[in-house]
Length: 245
Ligand SMILES: C[S@@+](CC[C@H](N)C(=O)[O-])C[C@H]1O[C@@H](n2cnc3c(N)ncnc32)[C@H](O)[C@@H]1O
Image (spheres, protein in one colour):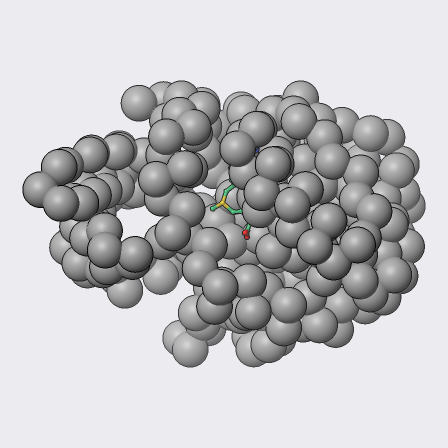
């Protein structure tokens, strides 16, 4: 369970739910918002946990030099196909986010769509934040996009969705003294059932900003969505924009 993210079947079977055509369209718009929110409009960008390249490809189309990192060979393959389709060059790297570190290599680093907080030990998340910090040049900006502790009230216990004739029953439970969310997906197709469990650490705005300052970021601003709204009662997500001094 602690290494749920290494299970390729989870990303393969869950693909249709996480990465629909609509999700790709949304990501293209999000790239415009990322540029507006961070103020970084050109240069070298790291897409950490890039998945199928939803953000990496539109970033490359905007003229960024993109490095896209992921631990899933299946998703990196999808990202390469997506890049080929748009005829863009992306530097793909197969790596664990705890290990990927390229000192002073980037002007911007993004971790999109709840790709932070995957580890059973908090020190591993801290390592990822430190890697992001070290991988930026001075004045570089990191953007982390997650669900937060303040927003977990929006989680229903049980959700049912359907994609490509597969039904997904999704259940969520707050565990470990309100530090992590444990989720269960039951996928049903033609009467056959697959079950997956995963666990993500949930940070409050304060906790995430403290962590980022702790690893050396000078300035951390929180937003409630990529549209730049403040991190308050109307927040939809927790966005941390952290600048390296
Ligand atoms: C929720 S998906 C988000 C993908 C992408 N950021 C997006 O918005 O489409 C999380 C991604 O993190 C990757 N991942 C999970 N654990 C990882 C790890 N330890 N190191 C690097 N990537 C990891 C997964 O393979 C997956 O692509």
